[in-house]
Image (cartoon, rainbow, N blue to C red):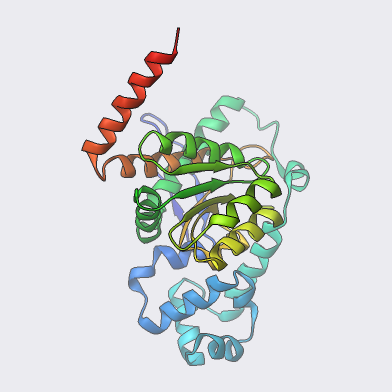
Length: 301
């Protein structure tokens, strides 16, 4: 199994810690700066079809990545797997985890842990998930996401799935106050098809897609990328299939105390992106916010 890490207590005075086993995608991104040029090619090959690409034999995978078999073995060892078989066992476990839904997770959820309350469990598990997400975020992908969403010369389309549409609406509503040209797309085929009519290479398309991944969202993102749009993907650590077409991937934990996906870490990453966007040009941002306030006061009785 890959190495785990111990997180600091989320709040002063707490003595609890929590360990988290990283996915292969997390391990690769966290060690991006340690990888050689050949190892970066391996990383890119895995992410193009994650996690299935890594389940081939060493020789077959080395051929796809354009490297030698010993380079693949050294790469997996650098990630913390003593053997390639253990590396593949982790990927197979992730394949199973990607398809797990609320019903399956409900059966493994500890609803009656003695000596704890729901609020205490949420404090520890959700708090640590947020800290973990922000602490281990990929700086390279985050910077790309900020550049692609904050650039006022690029129109931005933002959409999500049945549940993650709430994240998309939050980002769109907030980003609209900082810059022009931001549009929220309902997770409906008609709205997305109409948006594709005008989509060009000048567009940034922000998509939210979490396990179990939604076919319509992935299809829309793939078509948008095919028309030249730059995809900023918010997803979980197991990675939506849309990751292969994304210019920037913002992966967040979805682990929490209950059977439903915990999206609090995703909200935290959206807030971080908005902070970064607001700091790109404080003068224009402040003038736009002032204008927004003035218009709001004019329309409220």
